[in-house]
Image (tube, rainbow, N blue to C red; front, side, top):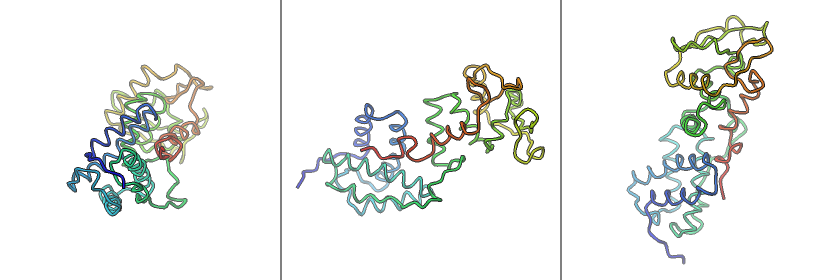
Length: 259
């Protein structure tokens, strides 16, 4: 029988993340730390100060607690339980928990509808994604596209249609316009036109994007697109790709368990 060595949950997590620093991307490391933080919080609430004491029944209780505590959907719960399984497997390797305890970590089964992500994120994932983008990809086109869609609930077509001149930094607002004659129709046509009030943090992001990162380009109609690449106005498919890169399981490495 393997002799277990005492270790506090938070200490084990710090060791785990330190080891992974040279093995995985910043995104994966950041995500694992955030997701496993819920498990550490649960251990604190249950007065578990030694991982040696964790048994299979505790992991089942944690899953129920996490589901109810966060009011999260099945995709998010599966991601968090998959990450916990990786962590518990690592804990086995340092004799912090009993061998094969990781096999007791249960993830919910997903049907096709569960696993389809829309552009809009759920609150649990949005916090994680936006914090990461602000830290590691600040004012990049990926960051601007994802945060703009999340904060304003714009459709991709409306985001593509925006020009620099549609953004009023002084009034902190964005005008959505239907301009089919110059290549940017929007859903519901004229009825879809509107002015959107923006929060200060989003205005600061747009200011930094326009001043420092946005390519100095125009489209074929000599308009200045707000969301732009070096080739001109961004395409809706490109926006979708950016969003999926940060929200779809296994498109980015975090949602695929690391061995």
